[in-house]
Length: 145
Image (cartoon, rainbow, N blue to C red; front, side, top):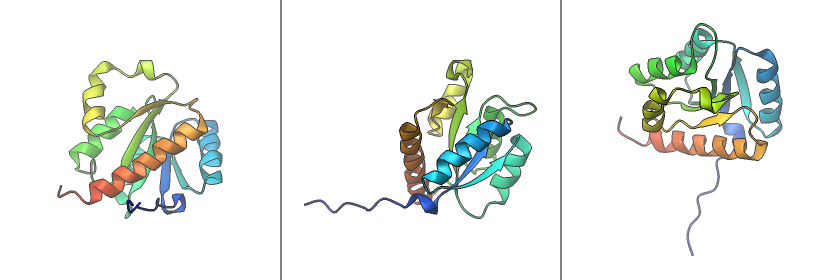
């Protein structure tokens, strides 16, 4: 008989929703809070970076790709250069249309294990990805970066 590791309760994880559209942030906040996640929000890249840099705890980040001023891939690049990825936070890149993400971004996303999802994702699929992100954080914290 295998010894199964119990799942980490969702209430342990805080999700940062980064999107310039307040209605998108509100929709995802309501959905995630209904499943026990704690949620914080940022309306743009600089606000997200400030939160991610100052957070004492790992965050799961739902990061919009297309935002004015600073796109999602620029935020990922900045965090990677600062050695905050991998190791501390887990990112899920979300966009209205995944096909708009340039192919040149894919190698970095693959290297950092960052999935791309559509904003119209089914809730169950989103919850699965968030659970996978929490598992990545736990695994990353065990690595000697």
